Length: 193
Length: 171
Image (cartoon, rainbow over all chains, first blue to last red; front, side, top):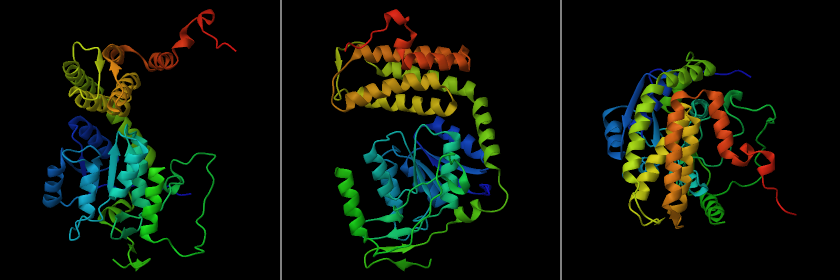
């Protein structure tokens, strides 16, 4: 299995976190990965300003970003119908790993949710996943964002797989696809359980 | 963007952004090399991290009340202290300061308990904060093996006792 390299040179990253020190650490890590253009934001207003003034390619956003949180910001970006950033890759970083919070982050339209503390290899793997496994987007009356019907079965190109992990394959479709409303109601039921 | 609707309400379409095109270009840094470089870079930041950590601990010390019997979720300082402890825990873990992470996590759990509506003794928070201060001191001097030993002891305090002193469950 070949291992493709991430080429982050020239990609514009925006790291949005109220914690300036964490932003600095994230910058260091991204630069070591080969990123050359990294912007910082301390709150949602900074993010909006950066999106207007720069061409941002990838957003790393803390779930607690002031004033309303990174999930609200993600939702706003996804629901801005005429925005060029509507499909921008968004990686949510969160210290709150309760199932409900992770589910809300996914439902806000984030490409990936990463639990803090972030490890160097964990961050690399998530960015690689977004780069090498782009997901289709779903546009429905209740949701806009990456298709939520996916499961990580090892990381792209074999990275991060353990010895015991089995190969997987996706079966042929053998029935009608679920409607978005059905998916929403199933997710709501699971959340209430 | 070409697309295909899966039903009347939802439209599913492939997305290839500028990021995807750029990140998949030939070249780039091999994964192992990138991770090693990042870890090495973080190691160089240890001195700065300790300065930041000292500032955060000083702020937490200012936030914690001097006297109270019980702490409740209504206390206005709880959210601020919780946020700072989370930042310490998360950043210390990324930087490789595992004892600080462990001690900060104990405080975070205490604040989580308070936030869930359960009263909590201030003494216990004070003790956990002192543990965090001790963990900070260890960060200056202890080697990795010593830190791992300390973490093991804190996670399982009874293991550090002589066998005769360990309580065995009654049948």
